[in-house]
Length: 301
Ligand SMILES: C[S@@+](CC[C@H](N)C(=O)[O-])C[C@H]1O[C@@H](n2cnc3c(N)ncnc32)[C@H](O)[C@@H]1O
Image 1 (cartoon, rainbow, N blue to C red):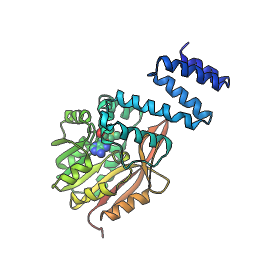
Image 2 (tube, rainbow, N blue to C red):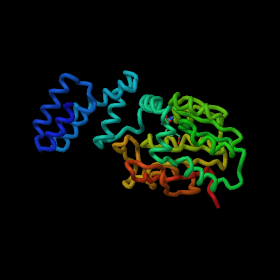
Image 3 (cartoon, protein in one colour):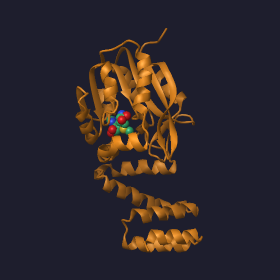
Image 4 (cartoon, rainbow, N blue to C red):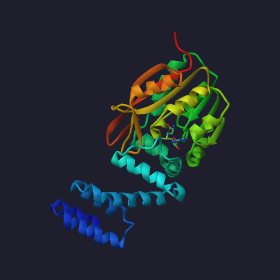
């Protein structure tokens, strides 16, 4: 009988110590068994032994970093991020770049199928509903797609674009985006750093399901504002938070409160054009509600 199954049976008989002993003995032989580690963590959590979980959780995160081939020098930062997501400890300002790149490189081949199918992902469509309304008759735009991923938004943006560029940290995702043949240019890089280094101006900058990997947004908004042409639009989706500011959830994604988004926009000199809530995708069978926001450089009459 596999050790995890035996432990679950013991646990269901309300024998936590026996279940723990079975798993620990098994882990001595097979320290890399992720299922056993996870089962042990669940049993300890349900037994209220939070202190005993910390070293096991670290072991799991180290294993995850190795599996994803996160470079050695970035692992401490990634582990701190994952621990904050699970424990609610004060989170870093955004997901570590090395983790974003490693995660999405692995995810790239199955990204479209799993998001569109299993997760019923609709963020690009909901963002484009808002962008269409905000643009009215405007066309032939210079468009920048931040965190473009596999380019799901590309074909929707193309009819409005004179020039369409995408930036992403994951080369695997960019390779897929390039196969769509709708982008004029695709660049690998961190979006904040790319915006800071750029001298170009865009009529429309979009970020679909990307700012969920950022907690603090002040700096990104400021950098976007500097790269918008006069009257330019910044359109993005984030997941809706109900507490002030932002929070990092156990899903390893941040949620943002609308008041915080408004404050970041104001500080960057951006004005609201449109704000609405929409279902962005599903998770665990439940709709994930997000904010779809369009901002502009010019105050509207
Ligand atoms: C969930 S995917 C969304 C992709 C695409 N926008 C879409 O809607 O299909 C998030 C993408 O953002 C990219 N990303 C996350 N943080 C980033 C950052 N700081 N700089 C550049 N790209 C980033 C990831 O590599 C990934 O491709």
